[in-house]
Length: 322
Image (cartoon, rainbow, N blue to C red; front, side, top):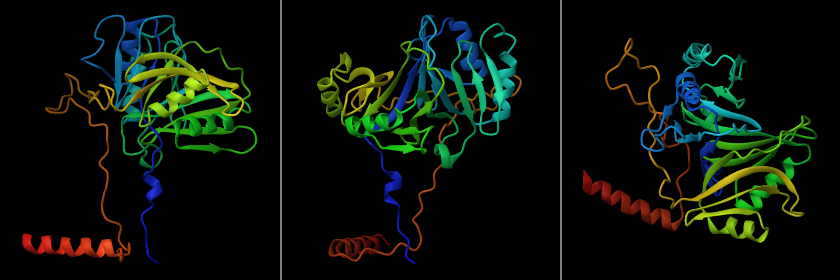
């Protein structure tokens, strides 16, 4: 039986990248201890280097952590880090210094569940190419707890207004709206019976290809909250596409792919480096796993006229090159 490439496997929607999550923290020193010392992440050496805010790099994504009353994402933040045992060692090393805060560690088969000093929950996964793509360091998903009966409307909102690649998972109770926001990056809106805390102002930032289309829809529905600049706008109410009823609140910072910071290279350090155990040339961490890109055997050749003409030209080039 002839084989064929699955061209849908590499499809992406209009949202092309989850770049950062913004969470206020009460204490920059404790933030440094948790995010850098415990999680093993890297402070951006170029941007916001003062005492009032810090940007923390995690692969190609970031946390932005300004000082203020703590903000808590209503769900969980998933991160991939390369070594579970090393992660646990780092977390246990900062436990004493974070005593008296909400800091906590718990293990299960899927991930290490970590709570930050201010109550944000982190699902710390090990690399898994099938689930999270070819990364050993990154932010594969954000999970939000949403009220019962809202997942379907949330899925339709992102699909209709943003042209996102979406999926509604689960039957009956406990549905989840999966919204693709980048290569192997998702927002998961999971229905729950639990009481959901009031929204406190935290936000996420994504890039989009079609920048003006969603803007027009948001403007028409009176959902825009900020005209930031030429490359960015903001909104926070997810609504039912038909009734405009508010389903959930989470501020979105929307950036165009022409934004000056788009695809900015981020510095990621190797947290295993120390004075006691050092490898020359090993300071930087390569967060992406090498990907195979070989031809699939057994795919039948194209036989249309355009393909035949191309093959003839190619054969001539190859012959001349020998």
